[in-house]
Length: 254
Image 1 (cartoon, one colour):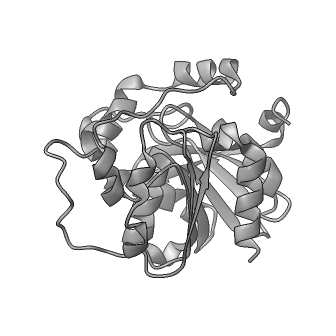
Image 2 (image 1 turned 45 degrees about the horizontal axis):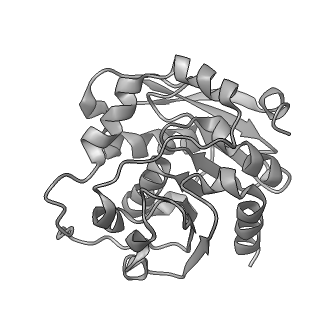
């Protein structure tokens, strides 16, 4: 599966305010849409196992976020503000002719997924987060940086993607959107997420700690399902792919 999925996906681009956003697609457009959003320092291929698993029942799309791999890499920190990142996902959904999508995000992709659900709830059918606490929860663990990749990956694929990516652009995600000292609680007006939410969290994540999950239930309006996985780290979908696949499938088929 790992070696041939790159040959089976179809590649495409959507335009987001002049920025080309690359995506890889698998499955039939007659099926419901799932959009996968990677984090740092990943690219679309991070989702290979889940894409393959769900492509018979869903039309699955994994994007390269701006600054990464085959997507454009606009110069300037301001172009990595969350409003632009949310707009990139919207552009892909619109480009494909869909009005709603199941949204799955990991790490920074999870932050974008949370923001999309709060800012444009009409396009989000259901929300799935992998080791990506709610932005208000991240403030409790903001003294840590995200982890680098573990050993359970195809190193060559990532090295190729790194060569096509812009490391400065990757850092702009943090400069524009990550909490800064002093790490006070967010006192801004709360916009609750109004769709069902599944949060999967590898408990061995040393950077986004499980404590950041506290109070998540206060920030969502509908049902919240929280699944913690011992023995899995920050890249929970790499560490425990079969369990993550099974959990998502069971939740979607409730």
